[in-house]
Image (cartoon, rainbow, N blue to C red; front, top):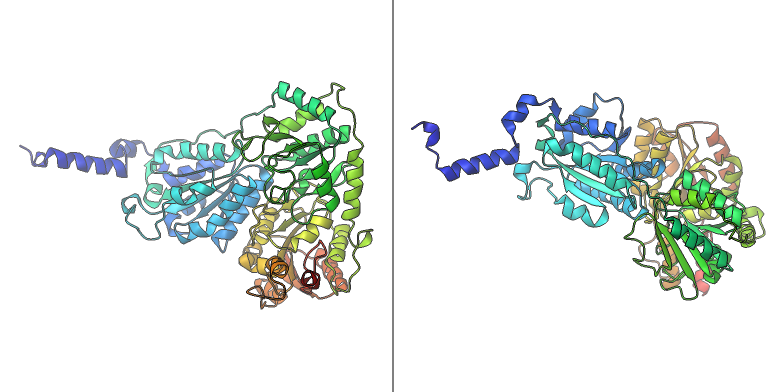
Length: 587
């Protein structure tokens, strides 16, 4: 008997099982291998159309970094924190309609990046996060920085999985693209065991994925048109899952043809041109009271692409989930959302751009034109006129934010891309800015702080010829201000406006409403943000008055690269709605 036969059968089987787990068909595959799994993964991304990734490098995916060294088709943006990288990928997906790509390492890297995944999920934006993972033999031992990523990310993404087999890399990448872009777009998370990335494979990339067509049902369109024709005071609420330039153009054409008032969902203000004769303004925090009343009094609501989430509907108060005396037509690309929260009278499951095109081309003469669209647009124009309009609120603030935004609106191109995170500061732009092109608004509906600067980096890389502005409060800015270094390193041309009131302003507002004069944990001691920008290698200015802001803005327009304006405002000036500290206390 040969010595190799001395092993008991059970032991031999166990040995073969371990070898198969670590690398199925090892001998045969090595005979035909052509590249590493990491190189294949990068080639698959290129095949799917990826041209940029955002990353904080980690030792867990070194083979991917090595493979990227020889792939000039992909622009690698090196970031300073994984939350910033994930926000950039989310913003990139928002602008392109294709998944934004981020690579981060395991454990701390992945948990930092989870904020971007959550935003992409709630904002319905396509994104793929790749996470370097522990080697497969180390799994389930609480290895170095080990996390069960499918369990961790599962609740906040569309699909989370691990790629254990190099031969299946093309399958997983194709599925990730299909999942991220189909139905309601959203994020996908794929974990990459570090030992798997170095193994060889002869697998080839799959062809590029195309989002499947979702045309609206003709019978449902006929029913919808009849319902709209029978309405006395209809209104549309638009923007959200899958919204794009095609949807914007066609829906605007349809709405203008019949005079239908159109409101945009929270932070979806570029879903229709502000110059449209039927644009009624935006819903969300601090909307025009006349628009709120118009939605409440509407007998028919046509929601297209919007989930009708908590922010858009002010806590599901208009429309309410049961909306008595109101008819709800809900157009959405994912059947799981239809009738999930709202009782829906007519549900259309289709792509919003294909729906908009069908509506624009529909002409059976059944719809009687409304005059409400022009009325609603006039109300919005008055509300958003800024420091020059009838609704202008005289004040003694040295730096008047309404006047600043009005001035900026007159000087900057309509195609400027405005990026912001969370905070009351954004309300001045939501109210007074004109989001004239698409895409021109990058702002998280999930309300995450720290989004503006990373989003501006992504926008500058994606549209280097356009004016890009990042807006940030003082608290918001220091969530991801380190990405100024990324902006400078990668030659980003962008303006950052920091609105500094020495407080977490939104929370202070709520605090003054609920517990007047009892300030707790909301005051901030801030650095000199202008000096900080200079230290990063950018141009900067400091503004304490409206006139100084205007001068700084004009000067910033004459230069390039990173530019930052540090605006110091009085905490009394709490919000674009006119809320003040003294006013809240006097209640």
